[in-house]
Image (cartoon, rainbow, N blue to C red; front, side, top):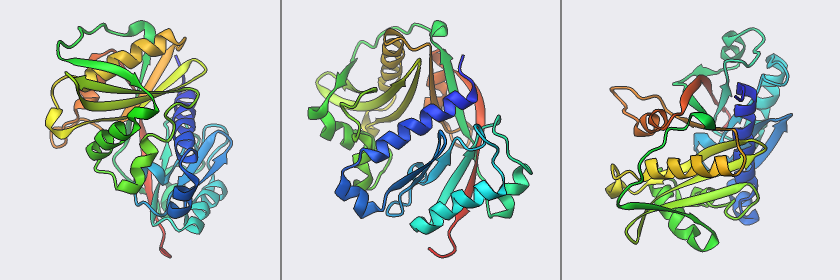
Length: 272
């Protein structure tokens, strides 16, 4: 089974490829840029106040995260003009000085991200839906995929291009779920070496609770195994009485398990 470093670096690579694959004119309009710190990465998109594309992933796993490295990371975001960003730290990350290192530079601890992992030998078979079918899609379906998933996330129009920037790229697989002939949900998968990252998933508001995401998860688990992967990973928010999260429960039901909770620290740019 993959350790947290492999899990974090796979997600970091997936997001980097998504951002770097955006059309050049859109990257210029959004001010998008990336910077690698070894296999860790910082993503800056000052033109979109969205946490997913203004964050650092994988720090402290190849080299310790100390005050100097954190200052370098934060300078990258400030110089890019990002109003606020996240620095995310897996439990196995080495942070010299602990949480105080992040707090001294303005980091505020927020609700953690739940990281899931699955050994593909442990996948639980699930009966196929009688009404929902899943199809892997290519470029001609990009508009429908972008519309459905983008609306599910309430994404600004400018950022919806990120959802389909890697359609057709090596290692990437995009799927849509159909209720009859109507597309109602979408999801993506990125494969590298023997691991697969699941993300980019959303369902039309009026088509929820029909099993679309269960069907999409089941299909991706099967395809990842067929492609030679031994493990898969995904992330979501916690499932609480105040904020129920069906994605969290779907992953558990299909044989994925909680690998760890990833701390995230919010920073703000006083000059922005």
